[in-house]
Length: 359
Image 1 (tube, helix red, strand yellow):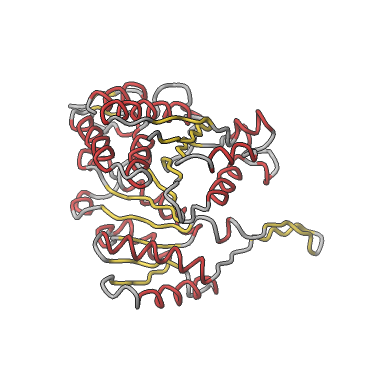
Image 2: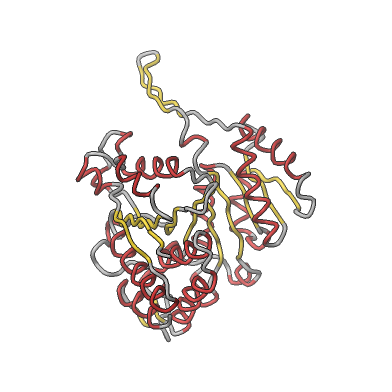
């Protein structure tokens, strides 16, 4: 049976890295006897230029009609001055809400071949970096009411942060279930010493803990968590947190693994249809120069095969091919060590080709 994949190439380096991921998927289809069909979707800055809308309804419907969505990256300085509701990132928020994908899962795992690229001290890296951040994706301050009003003759900006018990409960269950499949340790991150929303978050998480006696639950304030991720990341197994905190912490976590270009993410809801993307941005400064790292997008495609299509051996094959290419010393610019002895610098297309050769 054919799998229909909605493809959002996006802005900046998005088209380049997505193209390499599609070539990898084509090789997987050839090797394992599958059929993947692709439906192009305009979203972000290119959609603004073409349609005057960062995500037209027709484009959203194409995603809803697909089996899953593969996204490159959106945004760039070209669209910095468009009105807030029309910014490229609004298309992404609307896509997540429209698809009902409320759980974003971002691994923070260091590839042994890139251990020297981590900015952390070697003794910290040697203790191990292998945890996963479960981020609530369609609630919180990003989806609350936003307005700018005039008070006492000056403008005042207001952003609303709200969470319901059910929103917390459903993402909390994802956190517990994920921890149950890993090391059975879950750290709930909030700011309960200041925020009412965080106090509710903590209350619901502890209520859920009774249903998961095999999972050890701990609480941590978000500022402390940001510090602990760089002090001793080995202490974490699964972190579950709200939208904005997860956005910030997951970017921090990605950098301690050596490069933001290596990290994929999945966003899932109640169905198997998911949204898969690398966690980095559109990097317009290097767009079109064939220097972008496509591995995060290729690994996102592997996550799609595993979590949406139940193609475990196919996902394993992609990850193994990536590992073999790294073993052989091939590096894009972002993961090239200061001492490049034994490494070969390659561009985006060449990295994709090397991975395909090992599939």
